[in-house]
Length: 85
Image (cartoon, rainbow, N blue to C red; front, side, top):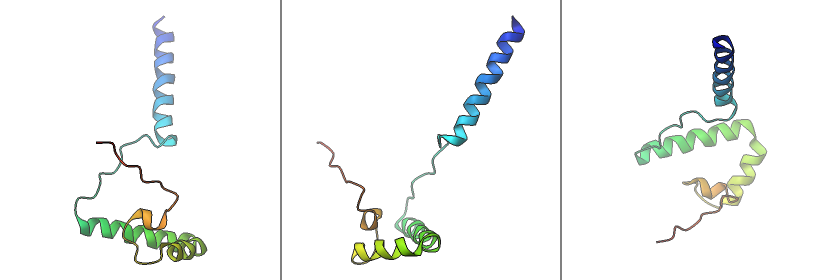
């Protein structure tokens, strides 16, 4: 009986920790606190996208129509929902 329970627990923990990696359910990074930190993260993201897919980067910058300061400037498919008071 103890052997069966230990095998079941082992399988359960293996599946739990295995799904942690594949489901992106790990600890999220903390949100940036300062404007400089936000600007740095945005610049790093834009450089990464520029190197990964230059054609898509050019189209998104063109669609932004000006300086990019927020994610929604390029990612227009993201819908901003108003919170109810």
